[in-house]
Length: 585
Image 1 (cartoon, rainbow, N blue to C red):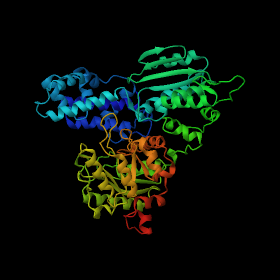
Image 2 (cartoon, rainbow, N blue to C red):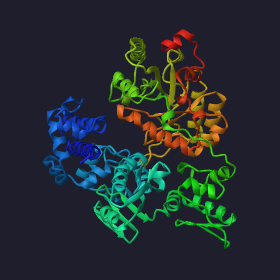
Image 3 (cartoon, helix red, strand yellow):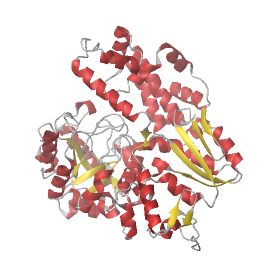
Image 4 (cartoon, rainbow, N blue to C red):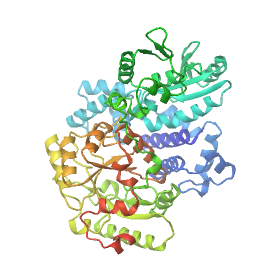
């Protein structure tokens, strides 16, 4: 088992124990172990071989034994017993927004509800309305959550799909007879969620790679001479198409592009006297010879277009831009100099300030912003003014030690209260290097109210960045009803930055808004919303979305070096040049 599978089992055991009403300390231990495994920077198998698991924070002797046991593919007796004892459907119910272990247990004990299907029937009959702790409003929320779940059924987050796909791609490339192999489909286009995994292979002979591929499946869904589909143990469908080496660039283009992009490309190609398919480029007139095509770049050039990166192939003006040679050079992950939206153990993060800083330096960044939650976020252990001042002072001291090359910026993710005021007074906010203003409460406000609320926050002179604009949680929670255009207008008018939250569950502001907004002068900050050291790598997901939104390096402030970044995030602060060098606190 890999670390993701082990972490999933530890998390599931914690949830099963919660449903039983077991000791909360034991539950937290398993949950903490799951996070520790998932956030490992070192190779898990090497740690096990060297008997160093217990050196990891959150992993004691017992958990080390369990992790070792699971890594060897053995069955964990506790896990097996809990699965037999507790209906599987109860765990699925806990994934619905608004249903925690206590409520799921109450539904099971009092109404004998064992699955989401049972719950749906009970809701349709109004059985929960009079149940203690529920009521009519809860019924409405649960019905909405179920509709959202059904809408997202069969799809997973891009990040999770990528974690699944790249080891398979690596194995395909190493398979006998394989000449080329690539990921295709929505995963290659970097869509927020993915329905299945698509692989394209050029191989000779075909038999070997097909046999290898079919052996990976928990279930074989379809098989043919050149294509096959399997279902993995996780439930994910994986499709394979095998072509010749000559066909590879055409097939890669065909199986990557959205349907709309491909239709428009074919129309464009026909006008130029060619017929394009997944197998090749054919002239419509006799005597015309196709140029040699060895890559997608060659293909685009042959039909009179500049190369269109996979992320842009959504039929949103990319073909017209390519015809004029105006596809921009999109931002790249290596250009990111640091991120600003990061949490520590001071609020609801899982790593200390020093641990987060050390990881930022290991990533090669020049700076790292710390923005723990503000005082009204009680559920996230938000910082009182006194605790915030203590953290600011700690960051000042840390920068002065010169222990790291990376520079640490002191900020806050400050709640935008329901009336649009900020959670700290201006006298507090002006002490910070930057302020991220975010909505975390009263998400059900109507569009006019929540739009006005956000705009009021953007008008505050000490706000630098607007965080996760719509507060959406992909596959779990709908975006708030906000007028994005009006918010973008207000951000530009007030010279504020809007965050592109790179957390795989958020990816907010949505990529579909960025092209127009950036053309009008809006600046972006790609952030991780990191709550652990491993989360800092979410910057990759943020860059994916930025590329889908046509963003260039120039439009993203955290590609700027520190001296250039500071004026953008401190416009309304009266800092001297000296204080800038020392951290400006």
